[in-house]
Image 1: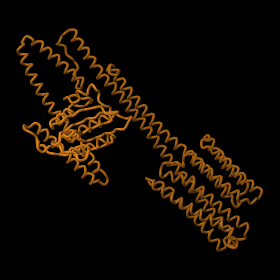
Image 2: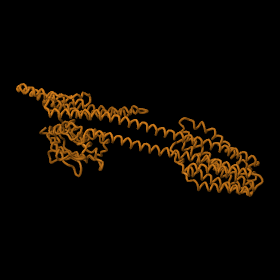
Image 3: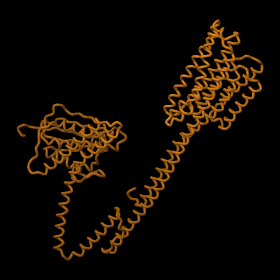
Image 4: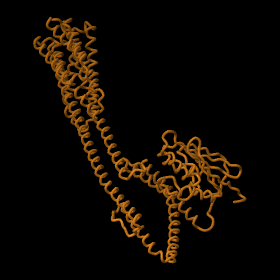
Length: 630
């Protein structure tokens, strides 16, 4: 159907297909980038929630020794809850944290109720801290922060979402534990007399120190992804101002088991530690927000640049399509009209006015030349003898050119394989040299393969030159299995590139044959490469190449090359070994003709049969070596 369409229609279909391909590729690109952008935007929503959560911790932690008036505590709680509610409304509840927020609100209201009634409910503070930590964890999970893909921001979010809320909860729990002890004992130094009351502070001390170590490890990991050093420069000092006061506070708590310390000293150390942690938390959150905004900006810039580039390419493609249409359809229409006029008027003096340098221009020049030839031939009809002589001379020249072309095609076909291998190995050697550091061993191996391929090309030329010489070529007794293995080794690159698996079944103890090793190697290699090409388009089954050697009767060896490719049309099987006959779009039609010539020059024969259930099998019969006949 496509073959019968006009050229203009084919060009339109081709251009439309290309434009649709660009649109589909652009849509896929935009979709991919939008997913990444939405991912980062959701992370930024999480940082807003975490920023709004920080005042809640301040309210809980600064109220633990009831130094804050009830009115001020109520004001702080209301402001914190209003900030959380505002973020919830602005983000339309996208993180689905309402249940955790309601639990935290209830805990804060309980904290306020306990203070108003004068109750010493230390567990209320611990419970409120736990609810705040659960909300922070829920925010990290639902906002994609816990799934952050970058090294620096991943570990920074782990500090902001998990480690700092955990640390604040542990500090608050430690303070409540000390407060509980102070309510039962006159001074903390008497804790040694009541070891059960000292157990909790000691356990919390270890937990806090463990959390600090985890924060340090996260910082070290985040700094590894800090390419410009800005992250370390911004938060390093803040983190040190958090870690040092906290460790000092823990030291004060630990030493209080051995000597008396007043509650005011505990309060000062505790307040300094909490202030340091909150300050570092705020700085870390700001830096996390900066990193996420930078990533968002980079993603948007990449998306914009990609869209601009795709738009330019699409515009350029359309412009080229229009120009190509004008450069092809117009001249072809002109040539068709000229041919029609020549046919109708029989006027051989008409000529094409199109003189471009492209293929159509060359067709026009050839068409003009043809018309000129026809005109001259018509004028020379009266001189029959001269015309006959001229035709004989032309036929002689054509025969000579054909012979030369056949020889050139043969040489080109045979020498192309080692040249292609030389180029492949040279490119591989350059890649190994460009490595850091260069892989000299791989380069040396590539050079050795280049030398081997060069020698193989030289042997091929020597073999062709030998065929052109008078007399017989030098042949030796050889093992056909070795030539088959050499062909497999030489075709490894093509086999690997084509995804072809090889099954080799070479019979042991086969008798020797007499022949030219290079020529037989070329036959086997040619058949292997043809089999690989026959299986390139196969997608619904395995691509398998089978090579076998076995005795045939008592006077010959048969070598089989079988593939699971598309097979050979039965109507082409009889002409397959003819010179210049090929089924490949870019083939010369020389390979199988040369293979048959070589096999027949060795006293053998070659045939092709259909394979079961798919593909084709080439069988070569080679006479065995007999000392008396040799």
